[in-house]
Image: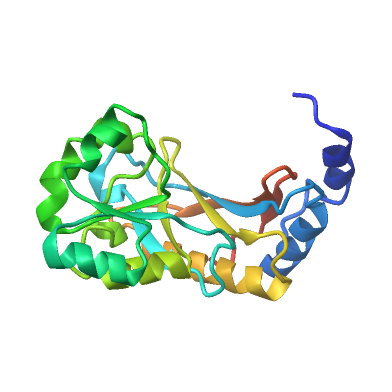
Amino acid sequence: MKHGKKYVEAAKLVDRASYYEADEAVALVKKTATAKFDETVELHVRTGCDGRHAEQQIRGAVVLPNGTGKTVKVLVFAKGPKADEAQAAGADYVGAEDLIPKIQNDGWLDFDVVVATPDMMGVVGRLGKVLGPKGLMPNPKAGTVTMDVTKAINDIKAGKIEYRLDKSNIIHVPVGKASFTEEQLGENLQAIMDAIVKAKPSALKGQYIKSLTLTTTMGPGVRMNVAKY
């Protein structure tokens, strides 16, 4: 794969043989963000888990102390008083069965997170084929299937992110934007790592965190020292 001039220049700043401490990695990643837009800083955590075993699955959510730097659109499936509550809490879209054809037939996906009250999961389940592959299915573990829709919306708007294993047993999460200060990115990174370390499956034998790579949308990867985790 051929990389552009900016990437090549940015890659020269990173010592491929080194493992950086968290604060060094954050500082370096900010230096490598040279795109014309405000790049997202991402963390990629390679784990020793085997996601094919249910007891080694990892899924959860954490509220980043400094948010994600992104405006998140929230869709809430609720009825009656809960629908009113969701509107009042600042949900971008609220609905029930009426939204099914819009999403299924018209391909409407103008939202980033879906929240549902438990009684609506039968309805939302019909959208599994559409929402599932996009990682948008509400899930109790992530706090998106709940009667407390106000808290769910507030948390999401404040910078709550989900983390989960992908098919290669890697967790990919946003840490913030390249425009954040090193301190803000460092605090967000710490919050994510605390949550992931806590989520270690008890069934796992051997090393849990195999590698940590911090990167921006368009920049090279910066490998982090995993020893402290």
